Image (cartoon, rainbow, N blue to C red; front, side):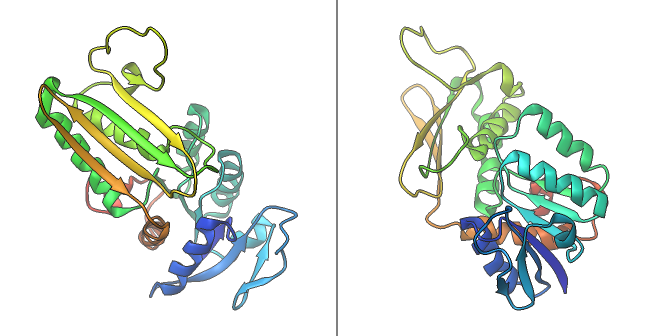
Length: 260
């Protein structure tokens, strides 16, 4: 059995990840980590595993980390994991360019998967988005809509940006040159080749994304709706099992799921 360190183990995602680690035939909980001052520190949250705020001690009991935290906390733990030689799976979104570059650099020392979304169906949607953009061509405008729960900190979602990047790849262009995140006031006609993302926040929605390809007199819609976090957590656990024993490097989630 390979041992998993779940970072943010008592959060909404952490709880579901712990559930799916327990259900996995080849994995077991090795350690559980939370922020200093968490009210459950010192509690045995699964048999033989006590909730800790000490990254070095937690990493000593792990073969792989699974983390869905905020960027700063992720990088702190990833640096420690690189020193300890522990593989790392992270679903943290909202990273700056500098933070993404540091993740890439640390991945030269240990195997890492950094993905916006671990749902198999969302990653299939990314493949479909790329193919649809390529096959439909310039006669269809691409727009994305996403909604998440009120507590989500970053906008647009990492998944929306992942889908927008897939569209840009299908259209053979740089997303940075065509991304539109805001529309207000007298903005003029839609720029040629724009890829727009609109964001809603509210309630407890785990995530919903719709990609529109809008043509003359017709449109194609590709939608993914989440009702739980289980498919995200289950995918992250599946990825962790795959990652153990892989060579150092930043491995693509598409490779894990056979979509690359």
